[in-house]
Amino acid sequence: MTLLDGKLVSEELKKQIAIEAAELLEQTGRKPHLVAILVGNDGGSETYVASKMRNCEKVGFKSSLIRYNDSVSENELLIKIQELNLDSSIDGFIVQLPLPKHINPEKVTEAIDYKKDVDGFHPINLGRMQRNLPCFLPATPFGIMLMLEFYGIVTAGKNCVVIGRSNIVGSPMSILMARNANPGNATVTLTHSKTINLKEFTLKADIIIAAIGQKNFVTADMVKDGAVVIDVGMNREISTETKSGFKLYGDVDFDNVAPKCSYITPVPGGVGLMTIVSLLKNTLSAAKKEFYN
Ligand SMILES: Nc1nc2c(c(=O)[nH]1)N[C@@H](CN(C=O)c1ccc(C(=O)N[C@@H](CCC(=O)O)C(=O)O)cc1)CN2
Image (cartoon, rainbow, N blue to C red; front, top):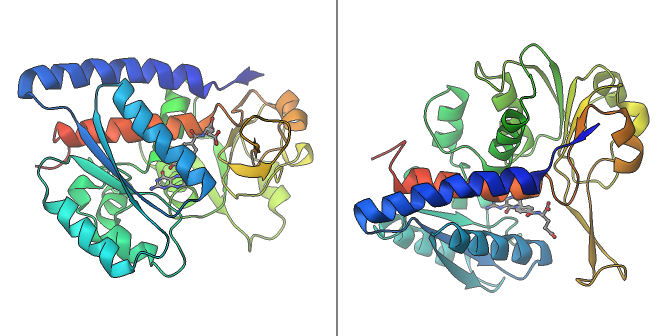
């Protein structure tokens, strides 16, 4: 069994991003600039946004954080988004999810100029992704593709089962794995809460991508020998075992599943770190105007 090491891969990719950011600075006098909007004080979101900001600095980007408390109105947020859309000093921006219940995430996503949508969530980017056109790819699925590529894992012709159909992971992941590209060209089954007899599907899978948001959801009896298992789960539980007071669990029962796998991602230290590096890649592409003018 080989561990798919998100730390190793993301550090390697960040070295190249830092080189390209330095070249851009020399050519244009500008650093790529990412803005993150964080609403409320969800513990996970605080951690992820702090990591995004920290990693921007590491690779030589400028980063800015705009915070709102969770009583901010949808309208106030939409006005700020319009402002960021028009601000030419900003290459890309994100609104950290989840948002409080009174704010419609669809409205927020569609309000972002797709040319600055470095999260790759806007319908124009998703549509272009489906058609294999240049665009910002959603960070987590993009990170998983980079990981598969780094380890040279063959996906063409393989049976891939994606568990979970969220807008930010499961649905775009299924599109990327099925696209006529490398990695890609897999035979993909997108499963979800209404799937009957999930195990029947997972037992035939060469590649399982678990993005369901339930601790230890994928158990050893669901996985065939030699499968590649990608764990997207970020299930945080209060714990006295860690300094932070939280412990992170994936969607996969790692201890029992790992011995059956050819490759598996750990949590933490796997897909999460790849999400961050993908956001950096998208921000660099935005600054270079690689996809849109
Ligand atoms: N606007 C967005 N919101 C959210 C996204 C997103 O891509 N854009 N994805 C997820 C959360 N996410 C990114 O924001 C994310 C998740 C996990 C990590 C990460 O670094 N995980 C570490 C562990 C961190 C910890 O200790 O908790 C790891 O896996 O090793 C980064 C980003 C939902 N919202």
